[in-house]
Length: 465
Image (cartoon, rainbow, N blue to C red; front, side, top):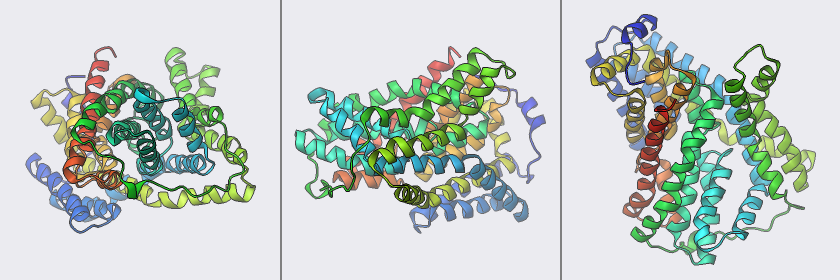
């Protein structure tokens, strides 16, 4: 994986829609990203519109015909939404059922009742990791930060000692573990196996979240020793639920799609015969669509009905879960359009040629590209989607394990150093009542640790795969 056959890949690549040289392409990429950053940060334009305009600007700077640029963008948008749109919708439904039924509270309350003192940071990282599996990062923050503030206040804990592990759990799940949008799109872009990526992602995620969460929180608590802000500590309204689902059944429901996809991955590795009856069955039930659909259908009973939801309320819950993800779907789709435009103007071949000259390992190159886009745009999802498009040609000829590690390298890079152009930065700052400097010393450093530790473990795994 440390060397590339550029000649073979170049022969298989599609003809670029522009004849621009590498210098012009490099300038076009920087200009396209700069347009996106400027529109998002300076003019506060929605990310979907910024990515759309940025894609058109990218094509224009590269000297591509406008009609071809539009065709590339719409093709990328359509294929991305078609590939991951249904999965995002199913994940949103599952997350909404988890929150509204009281299942999320049940997980939180049960673990907190069994943890105290030094065990509390570990309990918080466990809660965030479990809750973070089906939830979008922003949803997970909104759900868990009130719990973090309450635990810190009632238990007289340092806010950073409790908050950093929870944030680390959410962030690692978001960046490395499918079915989150970023990893899903990267898997689709490089042709990786979802089950294998999930399995290897868990191997990388566990030590990463431990180091960036409970371990780093000790130092973060010394650097920024602040109490939970009184004005942000929630006063929860009384619930109208008849009851809540049990802890065991809630956890089992959340983990069901993960288990199904892992079973598929294991059977694919052990059996490795597409004609085998067992593998045919697991290929179906372990596909992302069926696994998430099964979890949603089970959740309707184990979470919704267990909480006393009527058929009407179940229908209303599902309906309400879909409306908020419209923006997410369009942003992800536009990111896919930007990715496809990058590919079609020939940036992939440029990256191949540069990587041959630099002799940089493919995994490290993918990480560096994702880091650069993350720093420029502030979005982990945009960084993942764009970087996946850039390095997709490098996946040609890779083994199943190698393409999975490529996805994880991109995911790790997409989390590097969150700063002022990241919405998550401001969300954490406001909830925790910190200054910009304090947020950088805690949240931003934590994100960087996740990124660096993640790529280190990915590179270590590449030595044995």
